Length: 351
Image (cartoon, rainbow, N blue to C red):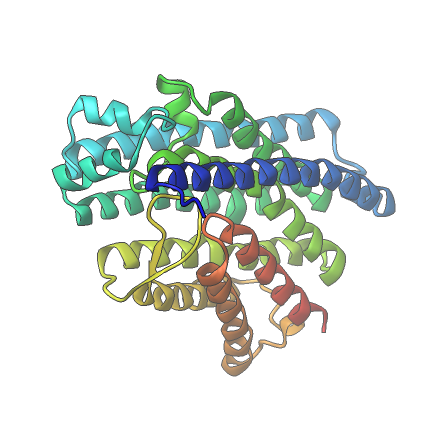
């Protein structure tokens, strides 16, 4: 029986991984397209989502949401990421251009070079800062505040989520192997330790984002059937496990994690830590408690008027999100975290 060499085995593994990512991009793009039909059907059933809203104002608002999201990419790269690489990681200009450039020519030796030159722990911490600063800034501004609170009606919220997701995903396909600052801007947050899969990982995550929040909002709107005022609070609560739980899992795991275990995923290094899992659960619980403490939150509909009732909701949500974050194939966990959160919130609100 012929055995494959290590290099041949690695190439076969890389090809399989690339196929998984491109299949996911295709499936999520189709899902994104089908979501438009679901939104159109929902608006047809409940025309109040758009009735009475000036078309020009709605168009300007939606355009503003898309422009804000793209502007965040530019701000992240030049105000957070480049200074972090230069001041925290202390890498030279040539290494910085290599990090933010295309990854298809990287090898395991490239990752090994960075870990040897700058220290494995420092590279791991910088990766966490870079990735999670983008993650938190985007989800905090766009999915927790701007879209839920500024977009009137469920229909406008859904369309805004669709357009914002498309604006940050589809350009990645064209820029995957592009050098220069345009590619660096759209692939901002690609980890060093993901090696040659760094940009593929980012493409995979953003492909999943095509369906993550639009579908979760459809779940809330269609299954929970909240009032327009309650919907924005439910959207905020649904976003917290991804916003803070997923972020703190990587940050705590990178800075303080010692008890590591292997997971499967898109990247050269696929490991998580027990400390990160605990941080994820606690972050989900605390962030959810803060949101449920906001004035106007529909506690009575969630059976959470008492501290015990509130804790019950958040224990279930935090546990579901932590299990999803830990055991989902790495770089696919965003969708499982948000969907599990949306279903949990909908069930407590509806019943």
